[in-house]
Length: 320
Image (cartoon, rainbow, N blue to C red):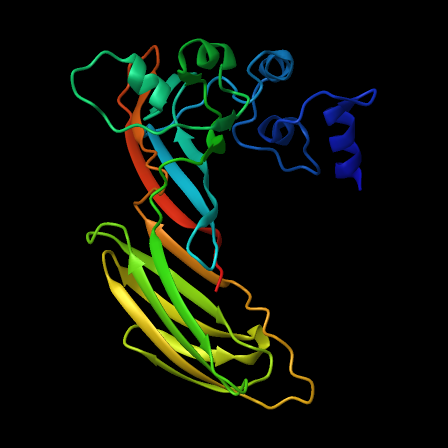
């Protein structure tokens, strides 16, 4: 309870937000006799709380200067039963883990269409039109508004640099073609599904789960697949097809014969959409990629950089 009172006292001042930086709060809210080994001097702590850069303190040192960048995307898709696109967008975020000495300034660049078009070059480079984006408070918004340059002094450790959304020219990881036929008498349903991976054959998708809905009065289902495992799961009212590793450019099929139990009052099947879950490492559906990350520091040390891309399913649905 004491910790809660201290947090409320430091984060709020007469009802107004004062200091919400978690890293700073950890430095001077300590309970008991345990103190952090790298606790700063009181004068440094005061300047950090009241200064313009409260998300990073001075005097940080690392043996190896490294930056890890994760570009994480979620694909949201809704297809009608005729194959027309009702919703198609990608939401992404750029996660960073910085281990840098001192107070470095970083410049970060994506293949943003506005930046690529502004650069004078004879070669036509692939670019992406980003609809909207939000940034961590360390980013200098004035510089971004002026020349679309993402300039910032990063916090130490993990943080989310930005979020973005793309709605044009999306490369869907999977193309799914369903064929569902209800036989006369409402006693049987035939399901044929074809799944095509649109990404490179050098890549593969993991944790692929395709949930094919079936009527509520399903008695049993006979599934035939050559890839992965398919099983009728009554609690989900669906045939669940799981594939641990789905190669790029591969084409897989599932055939299912669903037997229905007779009902006193037959009702029309509402046909819920097919839901798809997946994860594709080193692939971006929007086409966004990191062009550069430059680190400027007075000492001029060398920085090692790693970039990783992961695309997963958000709300990926196909109506039948």
